[in-house]
Image (cartoon, rainbow, N blue to C red; front, side, top):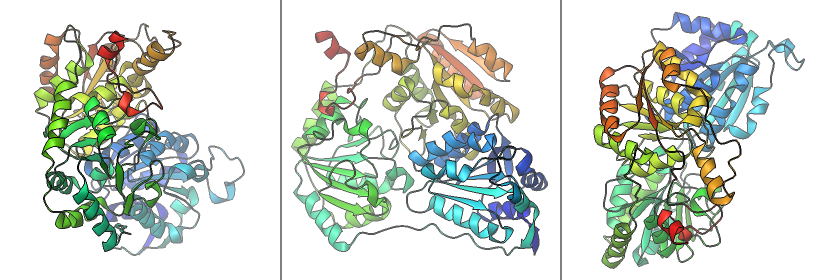
Length: 558
């Protein structure tokens, strides 16, 4: 059948199972939006307040559902406004297709109105990028984009389409979507060597990353931890891949990881790394990281194995596939003395905070208690992000969404909207500091426009908390541009954007506010006022060994 390029875009979206897209219209993409209008019963379009919000919403939708997220933008500034969201998705391996429109083909390269080489701009932050200048290749390009986005290590793909291509016509033949490629490059010999290494370990430790969630390997990880009889720590991206209430779980590792995880990994003789990339925020000083351990590194991306920390054995493959085979080979192991030692570390070094007044950890624990640990939590970046990682007990994959690799302030609200659209039955709560909330708070208008019942928790200390913490500890209290004391009233702003707003100033007010927000089934903002000098502990200074993690008690002893 003969279809225009705009019609082909819509048919390909339906073909790929895209039931929701996030975007903002403009001149060059009008043909596609006209077709969206005609197919509004099949594809839901969420009009965000800003294109960056659309990219973050597509990202949150993808992380929450495991499907490919889709965002749309017009040429020039519309397309460039997607860049931060695309980079965020790239750093955290999120499957996303960003569809942009550009000026007509004869106008390309002539500095035309709202013309930007968006494929060139995004080349370093996408798995692949296309410029479609011929309607005859449009369908195949879109199909390849979706396949690439979800194959192997997932990531964002950009498809830029000139406006005349969206108007031109060609023959279109429907096709069944291609299955994503599972990339397994390991051999049976690799598995045998790994099984032998596991069998000979006396003090094994499991270190989980985001790959455990992306591969859907949570059940295999649980079985593996039981068979190996080992403790488990995770990264920010790995939250929920292992039950945070399990006795084996020791908390996050790295700069703001628990002392148990940091000390335990420093003592172990085998570090089993599952779908993690040894980020600098995890390893601290690479020369001293897990210095007593052999490293078994399993990852779908061969480029990650040995990149930051040498691997004694590296296995390239889908984690779920690898663990299924390893679990079949591995006999039940037993390490009672090692597990007892880890238990004693947990008892000696629990996470703790002051109970004297309202604090973010208290708010997080109350959210956990009220929601029974079943909420889907998104965060922005900073102290609140670390507290959310430390004090909420994640028991399921895809229930903690945060910008880990890029550290994008302003990520959480858009991501929370996308997550709630993708998982309407989940209680979806975004936790943001006041500095982050300022960046994209306009997306509250998106939530209220569609009555998307998210809960926005603002942890307001009137400062850029994490930067101030560094200034306190390492810059002799020189608070350069980190104090946010001004006349902005977040509750009034939130009400002006169509949301219910609740201000909380005492511990006693926290639980009733959360319960009310859940019951209202409308967008609600809860502003929690906390002291400006609260700090996230434990902490490891940048580049220091993780075995040197310190907390407030250690500081007071110095």
